[in-house]
Amino acid sequence: MNHVGVIGAGAFGTALASVMRIGGLDVTLWGRDRAQILAMQTEKINVRYLNGVSLPDGLNVTTDLVDLRDADVVLMVLPAQSLRGFLTESKFVTNAPVVLCAKGIENTTGLLQSQIFEGSHKAVLSGPAFAIDLTKGMPIAMSIGCSEKELGAQLQETLSTQTLRLYRTQDVTGVQLCGALKNVYAIACGLAIGAGFGESTRAALMTRGFAELARLARSMGAQTETLTGLSGFGDLTLSCTSFQSRNFTFGEQLGRTGTFETGKTVEGVVTAEAVLVLAQKAGVEMPIAQTVANILNGKQQIHEALAMLMSRPLKHKE
Image (cartoon, rainbow, N blue to C red; front, side, top):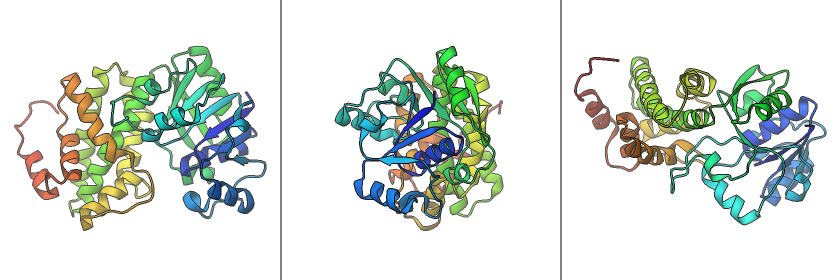
């Protein structure tokens, strides 16, 4: 595997393409916006999503999917809610293994990315990594999940670089659920901090949020090692504590001002509703996720919602 195709020229797609190219691979980055791609080709920078970060020499940027026909592996880095539409509209077909990189659950169906993409050879990539940190060459570790042991090992070896270390698991479901659910709890922590609650409140929301995440994920077959690993507790910690997290920032601004405007994808907003459907099917109680959904839908105010959480029946176990 030497030629990597990357579908999605947002911040994370551009970052992954850049780190793979710097690592010595031939990389083709595809984006649908012709004006954006033309600007990237001429200016060697993604002004819209990663302004100030130069693209590495030799990175091929294109709007033509034909340029990915010879790719040995394809990274699918589209927003979770856009994957089905892209596959339907583009009729994209490849014999190469596809690595799904979005962290979200389809809101209309409750399906994970690996359930939407029907290709036979696929994997998922998730974990605590901000796009800007990837492009700066900071040491980063992520999880790659693949049910095929041999293919997973091959992808792990190909996509790991001097600055990006991948840990392999066959728990495809667990990696995806962790990546999607942590966004909801990042919004919860942002709401609390924005509304003026302290670090102790954030710690409580993170801990109890992780308990909710684990209950649902285990009910759907996730492994404990995944939950406590990079794509689980690792990504939850990063997303709930940093202003670089879109979901945390969304929650913080909403908690502080009552409004939020962004041109960037905030996966947790949609996932908050989708996860409740999964929880209901699994018979799992998720009060924090429910509270986040209620706030986003305007059914509850932040202080009222947190007061209701605190007034729930006391538990014997943590």
